[in-house]
Image 1 (spheres, rainbow, N blue to C red):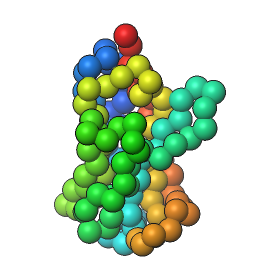
Image 2: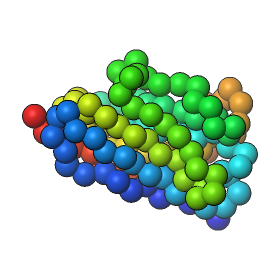
Image 3: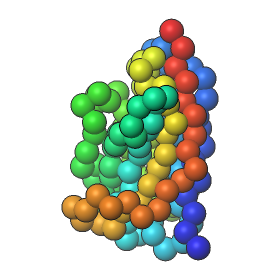
Image 4: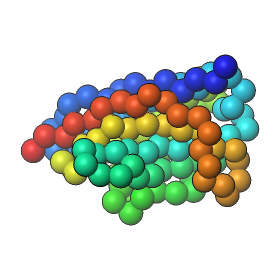
Length: 120
């Protein structure tokens, strides 16, 4: 049984920071790339960041480059999204997901999401 469980969301003022965590169970952590997505009210879900199975980050959305950092801890089977210099437009539900390592984008496993609200 594969499970992804996010935590760390909340309410923060613009300019502040949050760190999201995604704990993965099952076998996927050692063989899958991991990604973070977000969905703002009334908007489509967008990819935020992706980290390879090896731990090297391979993608950041232009809107978060230089502010967000994705990383993974193999000992804890956890992937993190450190979010700094948060903006009101970063508000949304953030979800982590797992995709087979490589170049594919067919994410197979999803967490339930955690709400991030940035106030002005």
